[in-house]
Image 1: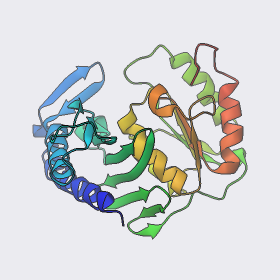
Image 2: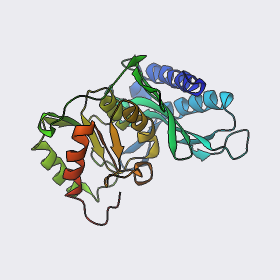
Image 3: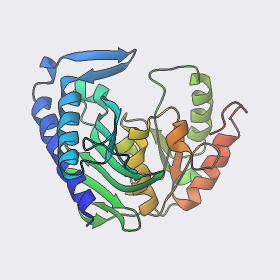
Image 4: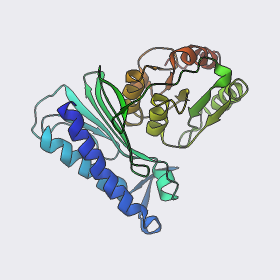
Length: 270
């Protein structure tokens, strides 16, 4: 196992302990609204601080891109090509309602390439990991995307807009079309776990608009290393920049992409 992946796992488990302790007293948490329907708790901040401390102790020159604290250079200074991409608690809204569907997501990027990935579900003690070129794993067991080949047999993950609603009509039109052509769609509310579920074959594909890099980075590598395909809405690789993502098994990815593209206005480039 790559040393950086080991450190990311250590950081994720440390954050998971903080989250699990707080989940016992979720009614006592102080919740702040960053913008409408976008919440942060003291647990998000404490988990993020623990992650960053663990990562920077081991790799002080690596940069940080984290949901709550933003972007920063390594504490050792310099201009490293490496950057940790961190979501300390993906699914905060679920967490504050006591819904056990949330995760810690940590990825390591070198330039535009994601090289290490960890998605940790502290509720189920499920640890999804991947290294570029080394495969994807769930609790050290190799995982692969599902073998389904027909769109009509698939279970698709998605997420609906919750902050900005300018594309809600487009979302609903795509959702309706996919619903009529698949076995079902699910919207649990934690994109990093949704992507991990594609990698492990629990979903056959996933699509969503308007995500942040920390929602997608780790999960995208998991899927690629598990034999799946990942792109933006135009079939290209700019999903971390655009925030729009489609992922799935090789046989399901193409028809799903074609279906979604048929709904897109020219104004959406990726």
